Image 1 (tube, rainbow, N blue to C red):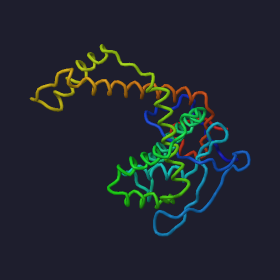
Image 2: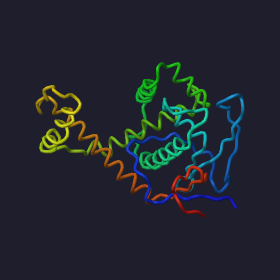
Image 3: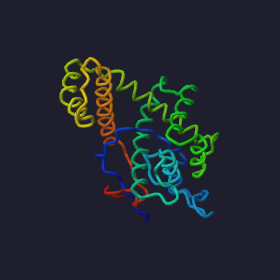
Image 4: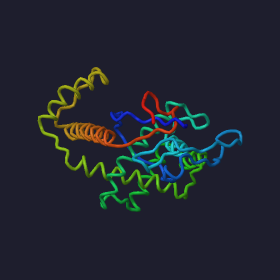
Length: 249
């Protein structure tokens, strides 16, 4: 019998999230799907396979992991490192869990200008637009492919949901700004710029308020993901990607 590893419900914290996985089939109908993908080296072929299931029906494949890695400029694609694949899988699981909530809000639906802006933002992490699309092409993502558009749409949908759920309700008090300036900003400035005059609080107030806001949003997102993972049914189909997660069925 094929071994299936189930993730511990405690989960791992993830501060930034996004989803690119496709729903390819129902697990009960197709336990493992195999298809040939273009090789990343020397014209060979690799076999795609399902690696995880989220809440009984949301499936993640090996090609989804490669697509995730392709968006990270420094991640190797020819021979992906196991730790990179595990991190990509963890992120994709988080993305699925957030999208399940985001899809309940009509306001989270991405608009065309938002999709274009997100695509430009992703390209900005690479030396050029051509380098970006060349890297995507190595994992089978064409510039005009439906899969790539879905990836970008999902990123926008998730970010809009997180902004609505957390950023809209994040409050930073004047005391928090003052404490952060004294305890964090000033010591950091003195370490990074020794001998330079420390800016007054009023000159960096907005910067500090923004930093505190982002920290609160990240913390709230982590808590949300911990709760979502605890309530979710997450099954790792590929034991090599389970890391230190235990359990089986």
